[in-house]
Image (cartoon, rainbow, N blue to C red):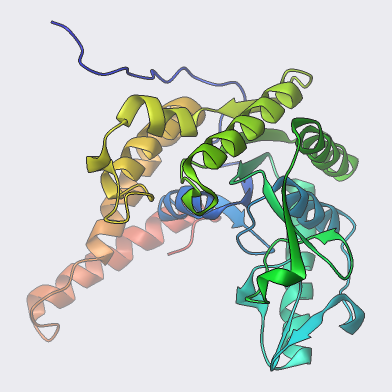
Length: 316
């Protein structure tokens, strides 16, 4: 029977992720989707210590500051309106309280530094090759923080510049963690505000740069998530109403691909057990004040306690 679509078949990757792994993630909002799945199954992860960032230069800055355990001071921040913020961070770190902003930024960097030293896998998702430079400093920013657009200069990063960022990320991480494996991917979310042709050009630059980088390193790998969305699913029924973001069906399909390719088969039995417990935890009874529900909850607590005793790193 003919197959009326092009199917991307997952092949097992080397150095797979299991329940002894520590996975750190940097990059675009698609990174958050992968992390949510890993967190659901109780893998040990730390996502986006600088918040969601889209371009390779911003990711390089985030990684480098985590590696050196940089401590931010007031001079590293800017103020717009009532909010203090960092051009290196997502707006989730912004606040009207200078001390609070610095405390949250520095706390995240400190945690990331410690995690990075023990990480087994780094997942980096690039979103776009379009960058914005703040005119006052000529530095590339991670987020414009709703500052007027005329304060920035927009440009397309060259393949060479992106490759240089990826090489810098690799070198920085290896100074404190020589054994870590790195997975690179391109976000399947299209940045159509830049234009259709401009988005394709951007994604092409990202893919070319990643391929140049991973071809030179034995412990770096490319995850074809962009290709999975564009060439395998390839249908608007796999998108949200905005026709840009993958919907739940697409994300589950991508997760199944990721799981088949990058997760160890040894993790499967425990994943199934955790999935059953998670579904039980999501159960919403009509009435909690019944003997039946109290018995259900007692058995659930016992099962979670037993699993946690067997696997101390897993917490519910």
